[in-house]
Length: 90
Image 1 (cartoon, rainbow, N blue to C red):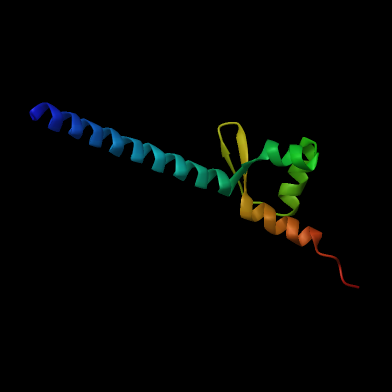
Image 2 (image 1 turned 45 degrees about the vertical axis):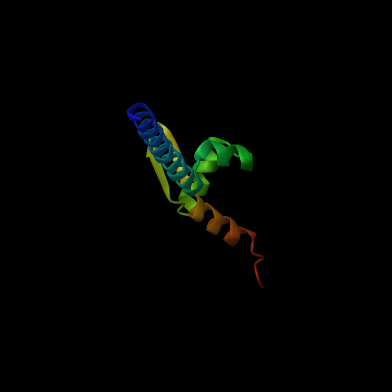
């Protein structure tokens, strides 16, 4: 009986560890949805580096850097794109 209880406890511990890992991955995906790498935006828009820098400065996009990589806040980018897309009324 003790052997089966011990193995059941080990299985429960493994399940708990897997739950923690799964929750950690979901948190990372939340972060990934909130921040987009600058190079991905640049590639999608077909911009060169100088055009991207001008867009960031001109429209005050929210950015952050981690090491040498720069990230753009998704909401900031989407709001800017909505403003640019809206037709100008005369």
